[in-house]
View 1 (cartoon, rainbow over the protein chains, first blue to last red):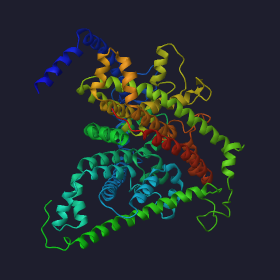
View 2 (view 1 turned 120 degrees about the vertical axis):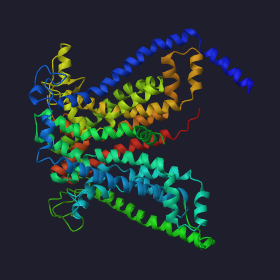
View 3 (view 1 turned 135 degrees about the horizontal axis):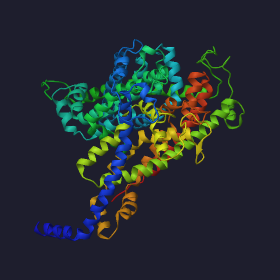
View 4 (view 1 turned 60 degrees about the vertical axis):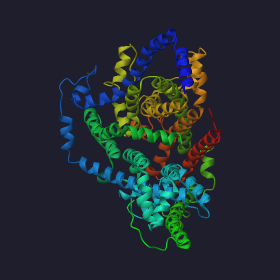
Length: 295
Length: 325
């Protein structure tokens, strides 16, 4: 014990000669400068969007452009909220509906199937798992045409359910859940079984509560993807009143060409909620993305 | 965990095994149905490839194939390679544009994100979290929103990009609508969408790189410093080789997502001006859902998927090497 602390002390003294720490401190300035440049590169477009949304359209078209709004106006927001063609609440509702069902169904199927693949032995398990993952990894660009034709056949075009049915099972989620389920000790489940719990009860009362953290991560990521999805909703939702927010935003943009200030206000309204969610949950989200990256 | 104690049969071995079996069956049967549905959908897509199929025509009895939606064999692919029709030309243009997009985005992205992550790694924890949060914000912004923000920045008269160019004495450009202007062999409209895309995407890679750099044991870096390595040497000779798996992963992911780019381009230019930014997914979308040439679009998507799959397989092969330090 004594010897190890002693040697540790000597190494720290050796690794930090004066000259070296001075060098680091000089480099620090440059590092912070570059990081702050990157920061402004990221933030300025957001700031421009917010500032533009408070300008009049006339001011926006002026050359040279103004930075701060000359006359701060809420006119754009008032116009959007009073636009009878744009019942914003309805579109928030559509997006929330799709996101809710996507997230809950993915959480349920991922945890259940992941649990099964982690803790049960049955013939053909490996083949099923492999087949399943392969099927799920096929990019949506190739399946999107037949999927659309199927939805058209069963009458789910222009229905929000059309966005839910094909994303009820998620390969990444199952993969993640399987890994977490493997860490749950078998004794925990066996104890419940001895106490007479049915298999479903074991899943519901024992396994699910153990999966809190990965479920939260998966849920937030799923919410983000669903909320921002664009291509598939655009294909499925052709009537205006059933559209989700990103699709309605492009529609609004093409209906108001030249009125940049108005479009910017609509953009603020549509992307702000997600940024607020992000800043609130940022630890979980970043963790989730890292997990998806480095399995 | 409050489960009532029951005098029950599950304790007897046979009963428990049966209960487990029923549980597994209860999950695998719906799962198998789901997998067969996916196989059916994929098979349908692969069939479409050989037909000149349009949903507006009434075709044969099986999936509307045949009849007025004739079988053309490999005709669609032959047309792609050496056809002279507008569609064939557009396919080749889209493929070329997709390749340009992907191969410009990747090196630019890496030269921004890797040094940035390295710098972030070296500063205090508090600032690191704050910087990381902000860098990550565009990743979570809806691509439609990103496209609209950048369209206003690129505005030929009142956009800030042109204002900055004017400030430095350059000539302003009609970024998203000038069909002829180019820079380094790539049209300005392509540069326009590339920058918007980079802005949205780079935070993702920064976060992955930070996680990878944190995984490298401190002592390795310290050892290099003791041996007299400077910042640049520690970075290039020690850190980069050690995070090679993450580096490869990032390369492949960036490639994959840029091959599938759609949202930003569809909103910003819709493939224009004069098809300078028409990329594959956009071409597939237009053919399938605007012009109802679904057989052709399916054939195009098969080409895209083959490219994407081969990149994925390449990744799995290379990443399988185990690393230890």
